[in-house]
Amino acid sequence: MTDTELRTSGTSAPPGAWAVLLPAERYQAERLVHHDTLELTGPDGVARPRPGDPVAVLVDGPLRLVALGRVAAATGETREDPDDPQSAAGPGALVVTYTRWVLDEPAPVDGLTLDGPVTGLDPALWRELAARLGPPPARRSWLVSLDLPIEAASPAEAVRLFWSYVQELGPRELPAFVSPSGDELAMQAFVLGAEANQDPEEDD
Image (cartoon, rainbow, N blue to C red; front, side, top):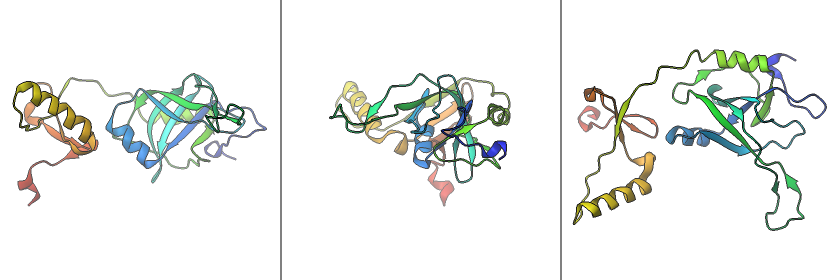
């Protein structure tokens, strides 16, 4: 068995690192709104992630690395039937605190075989995956805006309607406009976490 084929097992020592495989829908949700943590249903095997264990977050089709993190403190056990305190207890949620995001430019991963949503990894393999990301890019200031034409009887009503539309439509339907600070001519529109063309003349 190679490093890229490691599995969790009830008879072996717990792995020192973990790979978490996100469903496609969850990956899209992570791209739409910023989150500091990732919360998932905990694995039900004997070997469970421990607080502080490093985590590689991946998506399939093809396999790509989208984030790094560390296991946060456990949230406790959950009951199979929350209304029955005598029902069997299951594992609590697995909470991962993000330490690095590459959601918009995932790193391809070849030769890694996963054994479900949560798979044990050798720490050396996790470090190899993390090294593929290179140093984090420099952070800079951006101007992000959202413009909506709203008919209202007063400025206060217009603001109320604005926030209602934002809550109702959200990032799945409303385009947000972003540009580097001081360079508004470089403005781009984003919908669903990706750049979107908002000029109908360019679609002709």
